[in-house]
Length: 271
Image (tube, rainbow, N blue to C red):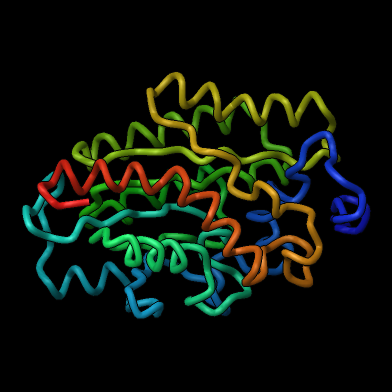
């Protein structure tokens, strides 16, 4: 697929759907040959960030060495893990790990004095169906909160929005089954406008429907103010650069911070 002509430029203002690059972002991993790639910022699993701004070793390996926590168990006194199950956007494709938005979120949490561990479980090129297949493996480890950033590759590939909706619902159900104690949130994603207004509207509504059906909060569009703005994206015109990732983190943090505060209070920690 040719990217030229599909991307909105900064000087052109807002397109009817401001997220022309949205579905392309995850799908961009396919265009870049990054599906399952481990390039700079790409990851095939879950990496935890820390206060020093570095990605730790695989969360799976780390937790295995530390001793697995039984599924569904909450370890009192342990630092709660906020798992970001996502795609190349979350993985930080094309960026050093410390510049990816999950690490920026960790820095914000640290600065706010909130004792949580942000887990980067992003995988480049993944569709909603792929996320559903991978969720069980990711959720074998503890999770106090799970944030779902999935599905934009579906839009890039023209997947029927009803199929995306069904996968989102199943994914939420899978999380609730494996980690019933975890708080949940679904991040709004959008489809590129080249597939037509009817498709982009149905794609958008798939997230609204899934959130309503499952009772899970729907968080704002991940790339609000970043998608299609050339100076905020990498050379591929798809993935946010370091400045764009900072803005993505700011968008996420506005909604995430109150949820984390509630989480830490519920666990007997001071906000």
